[in-house]
Image (cartoon, rainbow, N blue to C red):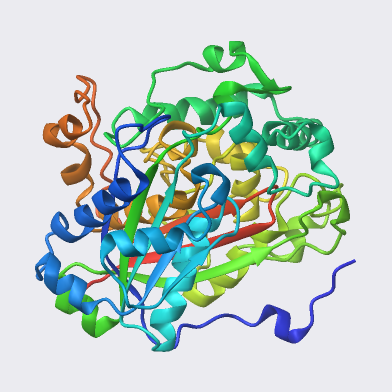
Length: 454
C-alpha cells in the first residue's frame, strides 16, 4: 500500500505569477502533405503573434522572448531526433536556450508546466510553448504501434501494440464494477463530435447519434472507433509571461493560477492499492461504503494527485461550482468518465452522473470539451495540451467567437462554416481547467486558469 510522507504532498507554489498572453494553432488533419512541420509550427506561432490583439508588434514580441519550450511526443513520426532544434531554427529564436519535453500523451501539458516553472522561478520572463505532431508520414497501423510503445513494452505490448486494447480492458472492468450502461460512453462521443462541428480547427467534426457510436466497428471491445480519439497532424502555441511582461504585451492576460503534475507506474499491473487521496470537496464519509480497492484498474492515481495539488494551490473547494469550463483528455470515452471521478466532479463509481445529469454540456453547470476534445477535434499529441489551454484562454477572454465564428477562419483551412454553427462562448467565464493525460495514466497535469479582473 502506498503511504505518503509529509513532503510528498507539499502543495506547489509559483514564486511569482504566471500569465498566458496569446495563443495560435493550425487546423488539425489526418494528413497534411502540403505543409512541412516547420511551416505548421510557424503558422501557429504567427497566429499567436499577429491575431491576439496584442499591444506589441510581432517583432517586439520576439524581442521579449528569452527561453523556449518545445513539445513533441514521438521522434518516430517525423523520423527526426532533436526536432525541437529544427523548429527553433525555423522560428529564428537561436541563440536563445530551449528544451524539448516528452511525457507521452501529456507532453503538451508537461511542456506548459515547464514553461510556467521557467517564468515562476524568474529564469525567464517570456516563453513560447510550441507543440506539434507529424502523424501522417507513417501508416495508421504503424502509427498506432509507435503510440503503443509509450506503454510498458514488457506487459501491455502483449495485448497487440494497440492503445484501444489497453483501454478496452479498463472499460470492461469499469462497466462491470459500477454497472454503467454502454450508452453512457456513447453520449460522451456524441457530445464532443457535435461540439467539434463549431470549430474550424477540428478534424473529426460530425453529427452522430448514440446509435451510430454503438453500431460503429469495434476498435477493441467494448470500444468502437467512435469511442477513440483521432490521430492528427498540426501545431499549437501559447506565450507565457511574468506579470510585468504580460501587461506590456496585452490588456487581457489570463493567469495560470496553478498547475501540477502526477504520475503512476507505467506497468498497470504494478499499481498498488491505497486509501483514497481526498480532494477538498470530499471527506472520509464519501468513501466509507466503497466496495472496490483504489485506485485499482479503473482509476488514474496520477490525475487524482495532479488535481489534489492544483486544487489546493488554487484554493479550489468544489470544481463543478468553481470552474466555468473544462477541457479533459478524452482519448477514449472510458478515460473521460474515469477522469470525471479522478478530478472530483463526482465520487468514484458515480462518474456517469456528470454526463447523464447534463452538467457536462454547454447548458450545464460545467461545460466540458467545447473544443470537441480529442474525440472530435484533434490529438496531434505534442500540441494537444497546448490546444486545450488555447481554447480556455480564448473563452476566458470572451474571444471564442473571434476564432471560431468568423467565416474567414473557416475559409483559411479550406472549409465552409456550417449553417447549423453554434456559438459556444460561455457567458462571462471566470475560471477554467485543463487536464493533460499520458499513456494508461502514467503522467497527468492539471492546469487552472483565471480571468484577470481589475
